[in-house]
Length: 324
Image 1 (cartoon, rainbow, N blue to C red):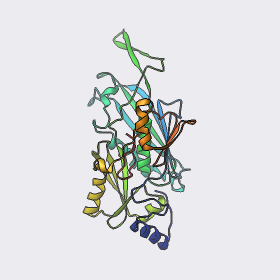
Image 2 (image 1 turned 60 degrees about the vertical axis):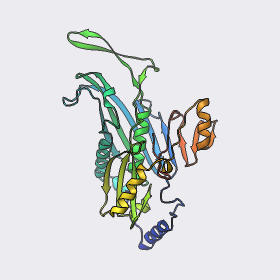
Image 3 (image 1 turned 180 degrees about the vertical axis):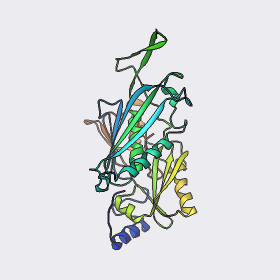
Image 4 (image 1 turned 90 degrees about the vertical axis):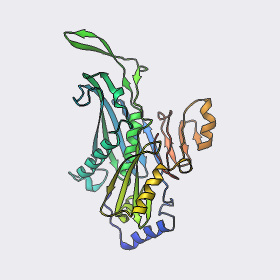
């Protein structure tokens, strides 16, 4: 996404390295950069998360409001996405330069979470036909270092997982209007079930019949076209979108999609949680754990913040990272 000018010699160097199986930064074609996730950063929001993937940095906040439902969905809550590309993230975002990208990201997130299989919005209903919970998800692009779609989708899922909504009780009725009481007990909260929520994985066609995952800005300059795939933890593809001018050969596109739905052999799930029962399972997938700071590092380079302690799984096709 960043506006970077490379010479033909620099582009050839990057492309030839991919053909040999080694990218400029030492990764293989299906490797992700270091991923850092922190949650609970914004105290005024119901949920928040900050994700850093390489040089890409995004901040997501979630706020809950109670509103009347739309007539076509009287028993379902709503989720709305708003994306802002900060002018500090990239020079081309100054003025209205980032509007097209923000619109594209918002539309993709709407499609990603529109399916009831992704997010059960019926659980956001308070009074059927009268009052439902509406989640407003704000995405702020702080720094653009390539692969925005994947980073934003990971951040949205982490922020929704960290969302705590105060429990609402119906206390009575006055003049035909229901009266509500919002619990002030921090332990009485409702959570958002994101166990089936998908994430986005971007494949950049950097040369004929070869794609790379988690492209850098320099690699994006070399690849004419990308395909963004939404995939659930169970490997179900929910949405696809092509970005850029160009085409995918049928065999290249088919191979990219198969990577997302491959079985046990191509998927490494690392589920981390506290407790004695989880200790043995953690030791199998953790390279080391910093107990003093309570920040865990996976062998893939994922560092988890102090509040993201209950679940994080890394779903990869050989090395495809996602939140579960």
